[in-house]
Image (tube, rainbow, N blue to C red; front, side, top):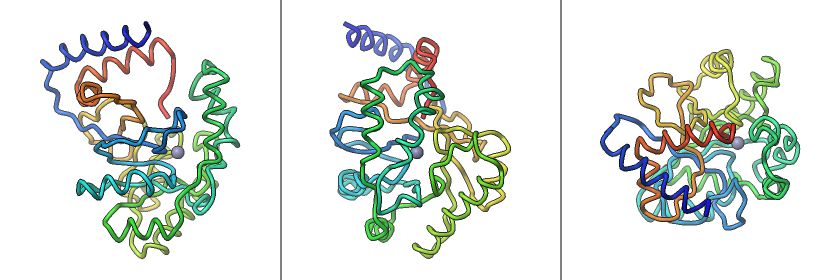
Length: 256
Ligand SMILES: [Zn+2]
């Protein structure tokens, strides 16, 4: 019943949104690509993929072959301390995730699914180099997936610089793009990222970036389940922004 109401709401908003024809940039972002059912995961499917956060191995296993097949490239933001390992920061931060991202309104079952993602494997440097050779872009998502809003300036600088340096050393080219973990950042954080030599940085606001004039606060549309072609078209319409506005207002939920 809930799904039917949601579907109807999307169609009504879409019809209204079609008339708006907004000038907008929609940057998509995903985390893991698998069939686990985790809220962090997107089912393996043929989509236009633009950016990926964290550096999950599934990006290499499932997304990369599809991107290659269709001649697309994407930007992958790496959490460099965890390369060759697992997404251990998720378990470390699970209480903050529950509190700060979901306002403690997430069910225990959903929270367990998120916690399980701590065991998801991440990319190896060999896999990263293979994708780099193909033309994929790699940026920093910090070294340890730090919660920027809860970290001192010194720690933020050290962590980000360490991540940037290792990517540049391994790939022998500048790492110029950055993605804020948990999309939690302030204007000072943007200045730090800028001062460290990045050219642009992404957050996680799902609404379209209508101007893209804040290069250190670019908005992105996060992992949105698109089960059919209408759902996919809906994401690119102005109506999607209205829908997200309603969801955020009703659920009081932030974007990750
Ligand atoms: Zn992340």
